[in-house]
Length: 179
Ligand code: KMT
Ligand code: NI
Image (cartoon, rainbow, N blue to C red; front, side, top):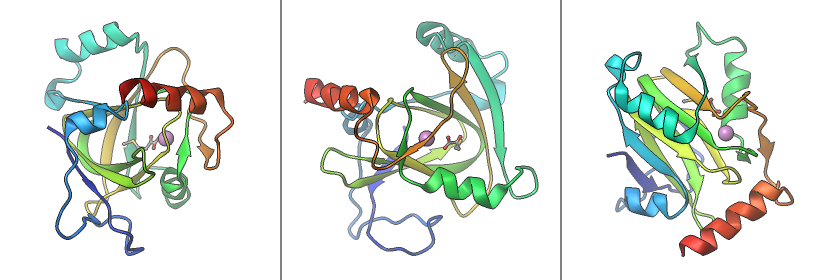
């Protein structure tokens, strides 16, 4: 089960946990109400995992690749980390599966508060098109993740404000339906 919590407002190092005191956890059900789904999979056997194959088939995730985020392996490391941590949305779902290492996805709740989702080896997450979010490494400074996509991938981030996209208005409608 993926761990998530509401963030404090401190502008300390983004790689820290940023929990409130006392901690205010967020359950997988609360994440689901925001359209965010998570799965726990067997990351040691991702190449032959029937559960992963079924998820890919059920959601038509025809494309996959693997991104390794580490200062020695990712070209333009610092610049990319900055881009990942700018609040943004996409016109398609963002699907990530952690194969090694760890990191945080932050998503906005309905009241525009940040929720921090701690992603560890074996965690898969789907962020719906139109949700404002961002990503950061944690203090381990390393993640290897599978990126999944329906068809030819489009990774374009639209930094906030990006409220006029249909993906955004549709997402807000989805939230209403789930309420
Ligand atoms: C993204 O789009 O934010 C990324 O691909 C980086 C995170 S992958 C764990
Ligand atoms: Ni994104």
